[in-house]
Image (cartoon, rainbow, N blue to C red; front, side, top):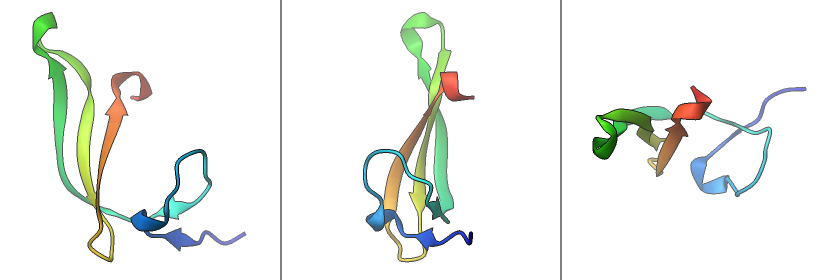
Length: 63
């Protein structure tokens, strides 16, 4: 079965087996300053081929 690439604007909430091809525009670590700088996750800005931008977050438990 061939992977069909989709755009960010075509994504819907919920589970999916679609493949999205994006560029990583920016990323930064999210840290909890009240807990001594404990890492909470990584925040990102993603950009697809149609210049659609989308924020994304990866929680520390997913690393």
